[in-house]
Length: 558
RNA sequence: GUGCCUAUAGCUCAGUGGACAGAGCGCUUGCCUCCGGAGCAAGAGGUCCCAGGUUCGAAUCCUGGUAGGCACGCCA
Image (tube, rainbow, N blue to C red; front, side, top):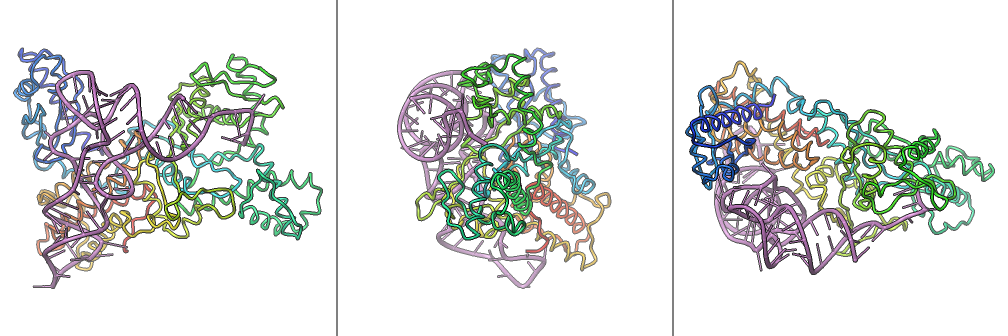
C-alpha cells in the first residue's frame, strides 16, 4: 500500500481543481501544468510543497506569489487531509496535513509484513539483467565484487517495484581465450608431474591455473597419457567449467545467484552465429568486405562497422554477443540491462547500434557502467598485473571482510564513484562501516521486543492500538519515513540507483535512534507502550525488508 | 587526437533546476540509578575545480578550459 502516493495524488488533484476554479473565476489564464510535489527538507515548510505557481509564472505573466495566492484562495480542502496551505519564499505553496495521515502506515506495514514496500508499479514488464559475466579463465576481482553486489540488489529492487526481472551470467567459454587456457592448464599439469615448462607470453600465468591443473590430475590421474590433441579438446570444456563452477560457489557465498548461466559455447555449437549472419545479410544489416563479414553498425551511429566473421572464417566475440542479445529479445524481454566495467565503455556505441541492427529500439538496451576499483599499496597504485599473486580476488576479500560489510560498502556508493582501496582493505574492514549503525537499530528493536515479551507485552494487532497516541515529533517523523519506503524503492529501481537504499536505511536508523532516546517504549502507560511496540515492530519490518533487498543480514543480536 | 566517468567539509561520499548545500567518519563539548552508549544532543569545519552562458532561480542544464581515471582491435 502506497500511503504517500495516495496522499500526493489527493493533493495534486486538489491543486489542479484549485487552478481550474481560479481560471473559472478569471483570476488565472490556465490551464494547470502537471503538478509536482516535493518533500521539503525542513518540516517548517510543511509536509509537502509545490513549485506550481513558479512554473506557471511564464504562461500567466504574473509574479509567482500572486499566482500562488490565487491558487490558495481557490483551494478546497474539505474531505482531504490538507489542513493548511501557505505561500512562502519565491512562490512555493507549502501544504500542511492534518495529524494522523502517516499513522495509517502502521496497519499497512503490519498487514504486508515482509512484503511491505512492494508495488505493482512496473506492471510486470520483463527485464533481463546481465551482470558479472567474468571470464572463466581466472579468479574474480574487486570490480566483480562491486558489480555482483549491485546487480543482485538491483534485480531485487526491480522485482519489488513490480517488474519481472531475471538475471543471467554470460559465460565466455569459447574462442581463443579458452584455447589458451586449455594449453596453459595442460602445461601446468605436465609441470606438476615433474616436467620443466615455460609459460609463454600471452598464456595465463596465475597460480589459480596451477590449482586447476592439480584438480584435473586429482580427478584424472592418467590424463597426460592421452594424446595432446585429445587433452586440449577435453580441457577446452573442462577448464572453463572448473572456473565457472568456482565463480558460482564464491558468488553464492557472497549472496549473488543467477537465474541462468548462459554459455557462449552453447550458442556457437547450436549454429546461432551463422544464422545471425544470414539473417542480418537478408535485412541488409551485414555485408562482406576484405574477406570478412561486417555488421553495418555505422548506420546507427557507431564510429565504424564491426566484424562478425573474420577472414579466417572464425566468428568474433561481437558476433556471439549479438547472438546472445538477440536470444534475450527472442525470449520475450523488452528491456535488457547489462552491467559492464568502465573499461568496456567503448562498446556502448556498437552495442546500441547492434540492437538497432537486430531491429529493436536503441533504448531497449541499457548499459550501466561501474567505475573501476583500484588498489593502492603505500600510496602507489598496485596494478593487478597477471603476474602471480598480484591481485586481490573476491575470495580474498571475503576471507577478510564479512559479506554484510563488503556488500554495504559497495552498495552505498553510486556506480559512478571511482573507488580506491588500500591493499590491506583497511577502508573496508573498518568498524566505521555504516552497515553496523543500521544493523544496530534492528538488533536494538529486537532487544526491546524481547524485553517487552518478558514483561508479558506482545506486539499488538494494529486494529487494537490507538495510534493517535504516537504524537511525539520523533514518532511522526519515523512513521513518515516508513511511509516513504515503497516510493523509495520505485525511485531507486527506475533510476537504477541502488545506493539510494543505504541512504534511506541510514536516515531511517537515525530517526529510530532519535525516537529511542526521546521516547521510552515499554513503560507503565500500557496503551502508549502498545502503540510504541507496534511502531518499533513496523520499523523493524522495514529495516529488515530494505536490508534484505541489499542482501545484508538483519541481526537480532550483535 | 577522439569518446566516457569523476571533481562538493580534513577524509569517504549524498544531493528529481528551488528555500540557510547535507550525511558518516575524524575533531571539540555535553548525556547512562531506567527498554542495548555499535547510541543521543550541541559545536567548529565550504571559492560546490575555473570561466562564460541559459532563467524568476544553477552544485545541478549548455559551451570552453584545468586536473585525475578509463577506453579507442579481423582480441575475448
